[in-house]
Length: 255
Image (cartoon, rainbow, N blue to C red; front, top):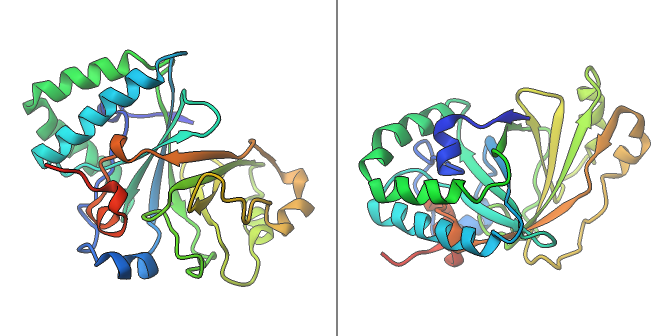
């Protein structure tokens, strides 16, 4: 994993929708919203007992971004088993998104000293620096729309991280394919042979499609997999992209 850049580390997580299409009506977005081409995974481990304080500060930061109309966005989730395990999703439409988000941060956020102070307080609750993976969606997989739930409309997300032996990335992708629309999304780290298998869920207790793709069970010698983690959506701690807000009423904030 690469350590997140200084600008993004201060903010904890950023996502920009500067390249996104205009937000669609909620009903339409639930059916047609395409998964992002580039997805940033930012994982933060908190100090023991710091989760409640962290949540309060992060909620204040998210609301302040909304009020100040700062065009930087993130979706925040928290492990259902460990409140000290925080996951941010950063959504981009092209590989230049992270750099442009950092530039926007540097040009806008320092003008709001209240935000700078809040972010310093947030950073003090971290057990270690956050880590990030910038990943690209594997287009071989067609996400099933039958479940009527996606990254924009989910209530939780199951994440399984696979560390693939170098040179076997193609074998891994081939084994994961089912030959039909699937209920998961596969993202590949742009800096290492690491893959993220993500399943958007309606609720944290949604157990459908909990197993691994059948083909992956037959090629276990080419990868190691972390234990799957179910993360719960935290709307108050998110400053979601406009198209996500349009699709998911839980993500809306009052001015």
